[in-house]
Image (cartoon, rainbow, N blue to C red; front, side, top):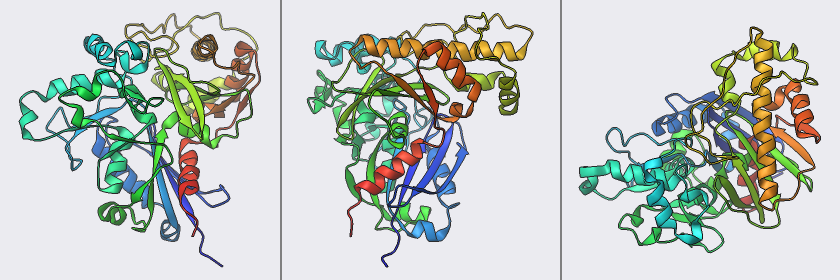
Length: 426
């Protein structure tokens, strides 16, 4: 009997890391998760967190892993040297996905040109604007050698491979990659700093075996193959068993909407990626379940949710953004949160926050439909918020369509299945 072959998926989410291991039947064999060991903006913490989690897996499972794939938050961007090392402070930190750079919006729009108008790369909330800020921060350090612009998943994938040459297609759309034309938008490729851009590969592409350093640090076979992953939200969709006319809402730290479309869509704050040969379209709000933890502990969220009657309205009209600025369903870097008034009842306040998130979700589906996406008939809920039954009923009332919760379909699971499906069969 041939030895078991396993796939390893790595999810770099907004609040922490998760690993999943699957067998050839696509079944979950093991999983583990943790918060980031350092601030989210610290790339070295991503690497150390991956090492710690991987070594939690039993040695016999690690020995059977034949392929690994990583997803990351779309838009979290950093500068590194060709060997992956980081610069002096503040260049040793990534600019997070939610950071808008309004002072670079005009320059970003000029770089992408008329063909890119309305695309995420032309926005103050896009990676291109963050890239321009990072390059500006280089200042007098530029003469120390060449620099690379890499997104979160691409930087860690570079460490796995021992080369930081690659950038996965979906992770680089907000930097200005045109996946339909297979080139960088506008005049991006003509800039003096264009050598900092990655060589683009497609999700699911085999890139090579683990580098010796990564194999040793993770306790994985050096013959283990590295497979190009995708963004965190798209990875979660891969784990769900979607039927025609299904939409996916990822109820994580941020609120993410995804659905398959027969045609690509474009617009400010809109993501559009090729996944499994189809167009996966959607958007990500800066609002999400993360804002709930500002007011309540996990235990309080469970207890207070039980006190909510999801069939009736709280009467509140809240916009639960964690900070000023929104990406989707509206692209407005100055949009203010609305977190008051706060009623005496904590349960009523929680209900108002959940309704505010549901209103953003409803506006998101309407926005996608306006742009030409199919009408979503059923919503599949993923992420930690999909464990809340009262929120499901509340959302079903406001969205006026069936809502199903599938919290077991994680982004790490989607990456593990992708990794194993891309590995050649012996």
